[in-house]
Structures are given as structure tokens and as C-alpha cells.
Image 1 (cartoon, rainbow, N blue to C red):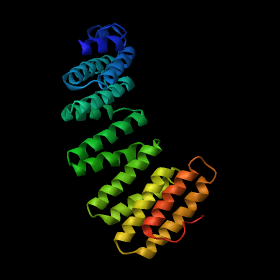
Image 2: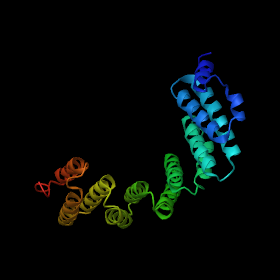
Image 3: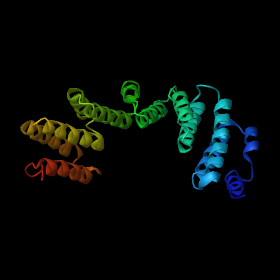
Image 4: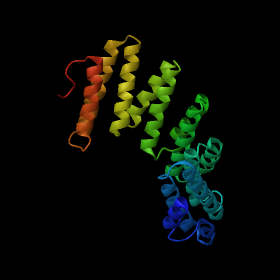
Length: 246
């Protein structure tokens, strides 16, 4: 009864069986509201409500037309709902469908989800391939692309491919230095990589050069204080002298 009432309220007194009468866009919005409401309940009711929402979302994707922007957006949501249900096979299938989107933001989201799913299942080679696709296919999505590069560097480092790791971190700094968080993360990773190799002088030189450039770039911006905190943390961990620009 609780689940029935919850879905009834979310749909404005329309059971999911009647959602098929809606246009695909309205159907998508309704199914997304149902999924959000289902996530707030627990136990068997939660699973049943999520399953209903996923069925409605799949119907919206089908009526929108395979490969359309709305269909890909719906498939992305199907993947996320399936993840909540721990139905990893269905999640992967949905994310693969969503990754065919022509909208780069949607494509990047789907590829990132595929990479995360592959990592969850310890399929590291496949995860790297999905992340590389973000780098190669989603140039317009700078935040997602920069985060993918950082993640690729972390994966390479974890697999003892230090040259590859360093190359990814340097690419973030060279190509996405205007994004303070990925740039700070890449700098921290690169400095630690050099420390681990016993190259303390090189690590200090790397830090000084990039910290100076980043401080100058973000001076007076809303990110200045958070960047300073991140750089201060790197300097403290490396036991460097007073952070550049202090």
C-alpha cells in the first residue's frame, strides 16, 4: 500500500500503466520522478518501485526512437536505476546504448558510467578504454575530459606504468590548466609520482612551476582560496618550503 500511494502521488494520480498514453518526453519526466521517489523507500518496496520506474523509462526510450537524444537520455537513467537494483548487466547494456548519443555531454556521462562499472568488476583494461573514449570523443566536455585523464593517470600508476601515468597528469596540466580542481589533482599526483621515484628535486621544481602558474591564473577568481588550500596541502605533504605566492 505504501509503495502504491508513493507512485500514485509522484505521477499525479496516474498509475504507471497509463503512462504509455503520454508523449515520450512527458513519459520520461514522469518515470524520472518515480525513480527519485522509489529511491527514498527501503526494502522490497524500493526494489519493486524502481523496477516499475525502469519499465516506464524503457518504454519512453522505445517510443522516443532508437538513437534519439531523448532515447539516449532515458537509457542513461535506465542504467542508473539498474545500478540501484544491482542489475549490472542491464546497467551496462543501457549505458552502452546511451553512449551512442550525439550530444557530447550525454555521451561523456554514459562513457564515465561504463568506466566506473568496469572498474567495479575489476575489468581495468576495459575501464581504460572507456576513459580514453571520453578524451578522444568529448573534447567539448572539458571537466569530464580532464577528470578522465586524471583517472587514466591513477590507473596507470596503480599498474606500475609510471611513464604513462606521468604523461596523463602532464596532459591535464597542459590542456586543462584552466580547470582548477583537475589541474590541482593532476599536480598532486605528478608530484607524488616523482617523490615515489626518489626525484625530490624534480618534484619540487614541478610543484613550483605549476603552482606559480595556477596561482596567477586564478588570482581574484572564486576558486582562488580553494586552490590555495589544495596547493598548501601538496606543499605540506612534500615538506616543501613556504608555498609559492604566500
